[in-house]
Length: 144
Image (tube, rainbow, N blue to C red):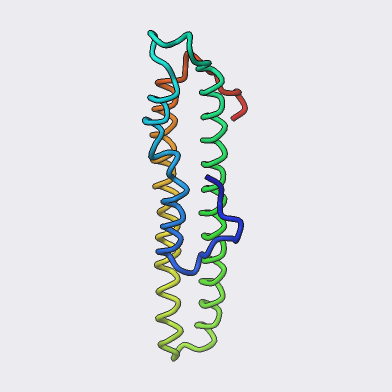
């Protein structure tokens, strides 16, 4: 699933996580998708497994790239906010509200960065399942 056209709200971490959850639907349902679309040996003649695997491969590649863009974009936005707050904090060391906001943004940045690790695990799992079922039907291009 592609990122929503209205843009991504990186300010609220809960909304960011919810968006990623929706965008990970293809990965969450890959086993079901493969079971229903890639035939077993007894049904091999009825469905073009190579075309089905190719389409699933393209969908996975697009979904993974889209999520990667969203996560990295939000990390960049939040890092910029943290940088600005740090600069403001250096000018005004007595402002506790500013310190509190800086800590909050730093925590959010760490959470967003941890989503990159989650993404790696999700992607690895999906590619493992994909390769188990599609390796004899479809060979992905070498450059990807």
